[in-house]
Length: 155
Image (cartoon, rainbow, N blue to C red; front, side, top):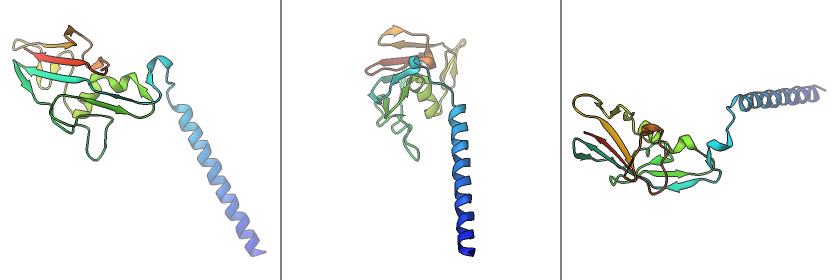
């Protein structure tokens, strides 16, 4: 009888843990923001390679290899110092994932309409950006695409 009683208690505890865990999971999922269809670029991943060139007062800056690679492998990263940004996503890809500002966040560098690195708009120069040779004022909000050539200048 004692053995049956212990088993009943164990099964009851397991059932309570499963029910409680299920409830917590349901609450977590219910609290996630809704993803709108227009915010989705792909549901099956992508592999894009935009190129980024940064020039400060006419001097081209090197974009280091292995940005976003290390203990955590970011889907947005570099492999070499050639300026190619790799967007390698598996599964769901949102518009925000491809933003130029996301690359700078991963890199740990400043980039806004007013500043690139520590160089900010003022008497010394201004930040400008072109995409495929066309002036673009989206800056960090620009959504990179495969084959883009993004040029950021401070002059």
